Length: 168
Image (cartoon, rainbow, N blue to C red; front, side):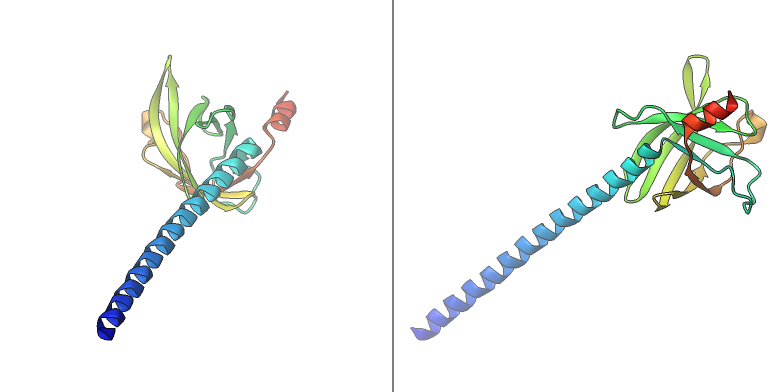
């Protein structure tokens, strides 16, 4: 009789241990999801609050093509903006695609008439709140009358409103 009670208590302890492990695992998953969501929110928030990003002004860079990203539609979750380059006369449009961790993915379009044509994708990886590494993928062949961008470069914030005042 006492062996049966010991076995039942042993089985009950094993069940409680397994349930405790499952509850701890579920708590860990929710914690990691919440942490990931906070990082993605902060990444997006920092990018939008700066309103403008550029690779102009670095005297140590090897880039010969300079560009600026100006964020225009910040009220929506799916923000957008324009890209101005030093080697292409027309402005390009970019749209938010997704956020993964400390990286933002954008789609870049060229306006032809009243429609947008996909040109490229770009990955913006946050190094610090004032420095982003941007990597352009897909597209941008110069012989197709498309702008040429550096494959990978660093960008930092600038004030688009001040730039417009200087140009005027």
